[in-house]
Image 1: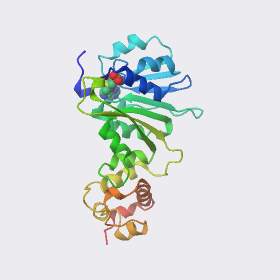
Image 2: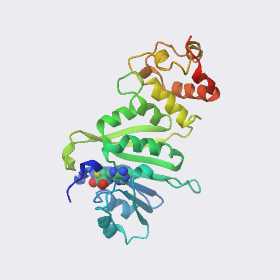
Image 3: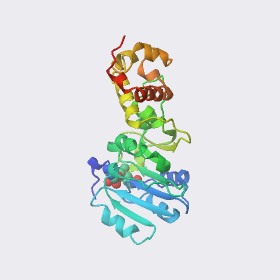
Image 4: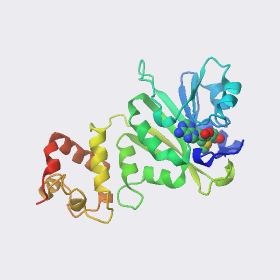
Length: 264
Ligand code: SAM
C-alpha cells in the first residue's frame, strides 16, 4: 500500500522505538485504550495483547480490512472507521477513565489535541508521537518564542511531559522532521474557566506577538483592568503565564460587557 501524505502516513518500523513506546505506556488489563491512527498496527499488536479493552480509530478505508483481519476476532477490540477529529470518548464510569495513544497524523495534530483537550475529564492520560517542534510548543514556558496559544490551551488542563526524540529513519516513509513522544496528564485541580472564553482571550492576545497586551486585548480589557489583575499593559503576550490567562478569561466571563469597553 502506498503511504498517503494527506493522511499523515509515516508508519513506524523501528522495533526499538515501538518497544520504548510500549514501555512508557505499560498497558495493563484494567486499562481501556483508544489508539488514534492504528495504521498497519505497529503499536496495536502489543496493546491488544496487554490491555483490557482497545478501541482502534482509523480513517483510511484501505487500512480497515487489514485491521479487521488482524484484530477483528478479539472480543476486547473495537475498530472505529472514523475521523479522530469527531471522536467522542465515553464518560468515565466508576471513576475509570480512558487512555489515549497514537503516532498521530502530523497534518491534523493541533486540531486533534484541541479536540481531545475538551474531553480531558474523560482521560487518564495521553501518549503521542508528534513533530518535535510541536512538542516544544506544547511544553514551552512563558518568555520564549515557542510559548503561544497551544502552550496555554494545553497547559491549563494538562501537565505536559516531553519524552524521547525519534529520528526520521524510524518511519516509512521518513518524515522530514524529528519526532518526539509526549505524555499529557490531566491536572488534578484544573482552573475553573470556560474553554471558549479562554480560547477567545488567548487567540486575541497572541494575534500579534510583537504588540503589547494592551494593544492586542483592546476592546476586551482596559489598561486599568489589566493593571488591577497585576499585569503590565506593555507586556508582550508571550510573557503572560497560563494562570494569568485563566484569570483574564474569568474576568471576561464575570463581566461579558467588558468586551465592548474601550481602552483608556
Ligand atoms: N500507528 C501507525 C504507526 O505507528 O505506524 C500509523 C501512524 S501514521 C503516522 C498515522 C495514522 O493515522 C495513519 O494510519 C492514518 O491513516 C491515520 N489517520 C490520518 N488521519 C486520521 C484521522 N483524521 N482520524 C483517524 N486516523 C487518521
